Image (cartoon, rainbow, N blue to C red; front, top):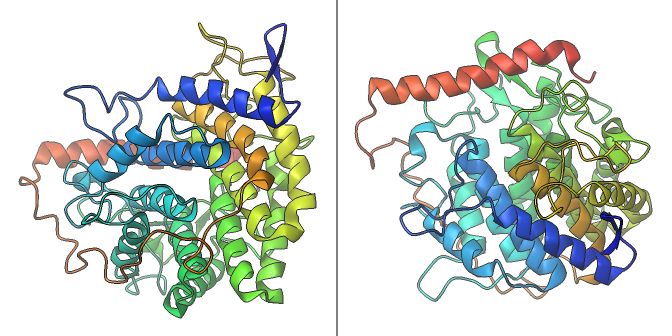
Length: 432
């Protein structure tokens, strides 16, 4: 990374790695889970548990792209601590408010660890691959045919508000994990579920015929109305899953789908610079939404790696966005805090946090994808052992923690209601 008057410019592989190192160090500074008395795998308020899983995915990617193992110890510690008693990322400390998407973000971190050949846990403990399999095994059993002809609900347990919402990110993450497990292992069961998830989302209208992805739908109305807000992360996780399916099948159907998603994500770019267009300009991005660009950037690099024919289309978006992101990572005491907006010609907007920092890290380090070998599989360098029966799937009944109190329910309800209200109230400024 070259410093010119405090502005970071990416000019070479070394400068990209230097920029990623500086941005990752700032990101790590938000994490307290390795402090004595704190809980590994948790971020402090206001960050929710799922985003910590997403953050460790970014730090596993960091090691993969740069070779710097600075964060390997805390990443391993966090994933092991949060895998829970059924080894499927349903820990007791989170189960009262656990959503399918929350669990899946930790599952995708484990999947990335397997694909990246991140050092596994010691013998006798589950492999990264088996943890991703366990998430799949618990989630396919929740496929709900009682309403809307299928789909996963947002929430796992019926006592949580939002249980009636069948949202795109939960179903998309399930599709993503199934697709990548299929690519890694070649087991048709994963392909069948990936196809089922894709077909259901298209049929119910969570994705459009021209590959735009919307937020979700209410099953109390039999999914007859769709919240049409568009977020970068929904497009991203579907792009990566579709690319994984193409990589294995090499067929025109999946090639058409990958191309369609790439064409569709142009809505999230301003002069090839990525933007969370639904909330950046009006200042309405919440804590979660400030991280969403990380997952589109991550997925675009994955797609270009496993579907090389896409690289000429994807590279200009990643390169321009990474330059723009790095250029404004000049805030804070160390002048390495990244703002939310990358479209400001290097002006840092002063919006600092885990999401902003993670998004900048992922888009910068994504430029290194041509320099690594690409995601491993069982037949191509994979070291993580399969366990197709992973996860205790006997029941989703929350029996391993104290009785849920009225206060617990109220707290979970308030949080979920706030999220739902913010989504619905914001519908008028959605991207159509």
